[in-house]
Every structure is written in structure tokens, then in C-alpha cells.
Image (cartoon, rainbow, N blue to C red; front, side, top):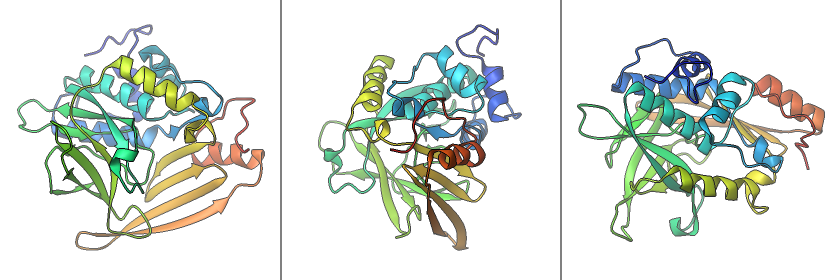
Length: 289
């Protein structure tokens, strides 16, 4: 277990308290799924540091201060999944850190760079690792980890996902996470593509800096905030709030209902962040262009 002293870089007790997890602390599939879902329900996705011109720190102590002790902040994929990996390792899982190409809406996967962080978690005694990801800012994100196996449909906390193989272009297989019913069009939609070679902290430091500070990055130009709701997903993208609600409409079928509204000024944007997303925006940060 992780050292729980107040000044320790990572404090498992504080982390589990932040996400409200009171279940078992053992490296099994049930704990992995439960902690994954609890994290998503408790900690929002947000890019407000990048919007303010700063690359957020991925140092464990900084992540604890912002995402755990801060309570009224969240983070984006590198922050979420770095923190989650530390928690899983403290619980006894072996974790491999991955990078992925976000391919929602892409004509060619190769046109998208590897800018997303995801994880593989190994459960002792099980033959396959699990794809775990608490930092994908989209309605098609995983709610619970899924085994790394192709062409099998998974129902994770009400969402539908599967992993498929893309045509192989190199020595490693390319896996694609697909979500069903995550858009108004319905059907299966590719979310991101990845291979399973491990990446290191130094790799994420470079990618994190690029995504946070590049003037062409969407995360440096407009607010992008999401939160898991009781019946779906809430997204703030620029000056638009999108609520996606999902419902079961038959065996293996999910229907998405999408409602959008526009924000008109800074005061309204800050109020929506505080009331709907549970986030206190930093003082002096301009949210709307």
C-alpha cells in the first residue's frame, strides 16, 4: 500500500476518500471496476490550466493537491490517468502506461497524433490485462475497464464498448476502442486507436506540454469540461453545453438523446462550472473568447 503520511507524494487513503470508495482494497477485477467508476463519478474532466496558458504538473504531489485535496477542480487525461495509475499500483495492480490516437470523426487514423493517455491494468491470476481509462473527455469513454480482447461487446455500467483490430501497419497490433450509441447517429463509433508498447513519464511530460501550450491545440483555445451524470454525460465545449442522456431501449440497444444550449457571458459560464460541473474556475481566467 502507498504511504499515507500527510507529506507523501501519493496518499491512497486520501485518494479513495476523494472518490468515495469504501470497498475492498485488493487487486481483483471487482475492485478495479469499482474504483474506476468511482473516480469518474467524483472527479471532473477539465482543461482550465491549459486555457490559462499553463501546462498542468504531472508530479504526484501536485496531482494530489489539485485533484484530491482541491475538491473543486479536475484535470485532463494525463492528470487523471497518471493519478489513477498511482492508485492502481498502490492497490497491487501492475500498470502499463499507453498512448493513443483520438480518432472520433477521423477519416484516417494515421492523421491523428498520439495525444491521449490510457492504461493497461493486470489483475493477478487473470490471463488478459484490462484497458482502463478515467481521462477520456468524451461521451464514448469507458466507465469500467474492459479485458483486452477483440470483437467482444462489453456493457460497462450501462455503456456499450468493444475492441477491434485496425489493419496492421507495423510490428504491433493496433487496437481500436469503439463505443455504441455515444452520438446522435447511433451505431458503433471509433474512439481511439492504440498499441500496447509502454510509455514513460518523460514521454507524457512532452505530450502534456505540447497539448497545453500549442496555440493550435483545442485545449489551449477554449474551455473543455465534462462530467459523468446519473443518466449520461455533460459537456462544456467553448460556449456550448451539451447534455447526452442514454437509455436502454431493448436488449443490447441504447439510445442517446442530446440537448444543447449556449452560454452568453463570463458570469453564466462560471456559474455553470460551479453548479453543474462542481468546478471553481481560477480567478482572472477568461472562459469565453
